[in-house]
Amino acid sequence: MSRSSGLVHPHQQCIVTSCPGNQYVEELRASESFYHLHGVNYWVELIEEEKETGERYIAGLSASHWLAPFGPLGVLGDIMGIFPDVFSIGDFSDAHIGELVSALLIIFRYYAANDMHSFNASLFFGPAGQKSFSCHLRISPRAFLDIEDGTGDLNFYQMLLSEPVSGVFPEDLCKSVKPFFIEEAV
Image 1 (cartoon, rainbow, N blue to C red):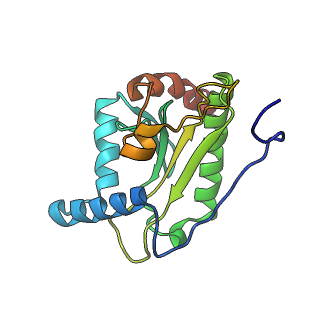
Image 2: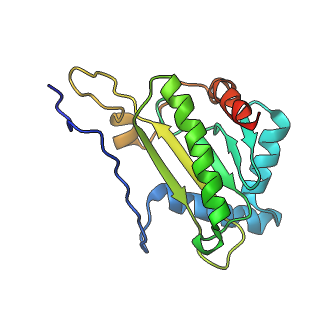
Image 3: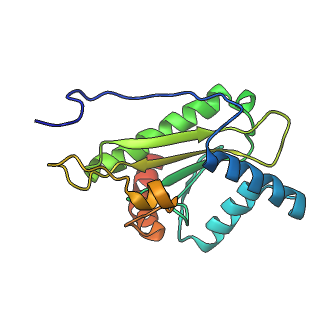
């Protein structure tokens, strides 16, 4: 018998707070700093750099770009979607929602084909009125390191040292996900 829940069920939390998580705060501050130092949006520059090198850039849709981030936070890597022209939740239109859902269906199809069925994901928006922090989503599959004992994918590196651990190279993840986006475009 499993020591975790017996039913498949989603968890969805919406967090609106003046005290967001450390990752969000760090990304927001770094994006603002980059914008003030260079006069351009970091997220747009990231997309262009990843497209140019081609190692981690998965696909571009109408309003979003999908890549395997250089610094994954999940044990099995991450997939990141960036909406470069969306800065706050008020900018996120029905068309953006439709594109996000379409991309997530592709990503879930990829994960299902690789026998991964549990995920953590976050969709980040910046404060209204700014142009330095683009909307982006990060999704990471959950990895249960020892199914029999219920050992999860969080260990002391992540918990106590705030060090992400990944057993997947982003470039390899990109190569394996890209065909799912190409297949959908056909």
